[in-house]
Length: 183
Image 1 (cartoon, rainbow, N blue to C red):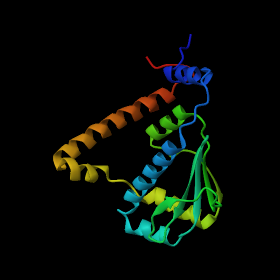
Image 2 (tube, rainbow, N blue to C red):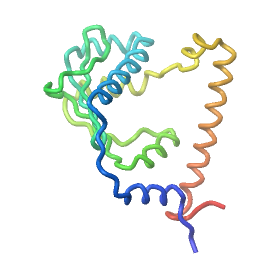
Image 3 (cartoon, helix red, strand yellow):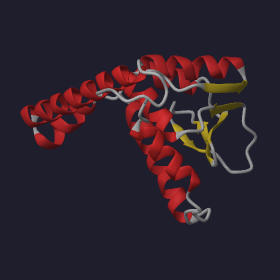
Image 4 (cartoon, rainbow, N blue to C red):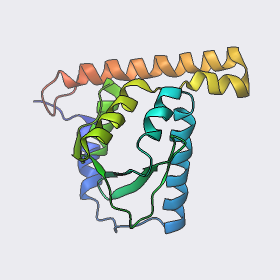
């Protein structure tokens, strides 16, 4: 008899719970969106080619959405991002097609990119694709500014080892038939 994966059991349980559709308050959504923009701009500012490419797209609007979550980003003349007005027409729509949060986490742990449906301006889509391929956040450098070089290196190495272990677990678990658990 094949046993079920704890991940599938947990996901099914969460989907079947009769929870009310709670919506976060507008101020919380706005704060999260602003923090995401700050993080994206922080990463973009570390790569001059990225800001130059975005500067060429100034004023263009991208709608990013997953399930019921969405927000609009606009390229600025400085080559950074800002939240676009809610009534702005999107030049590019990026929609994550995977509905399951657990499947999205598993995809990320495998080191794969999530499935994205792209609609709209081809040139802007090409620039966004270039950014996702070439721009990386140097977390260790940012931590070193706060904690020092050695603690930042140790912390990043610890997290990297943990991620590698999770990736190996996900890879091993995905080789089994659906509902079967490794022993």
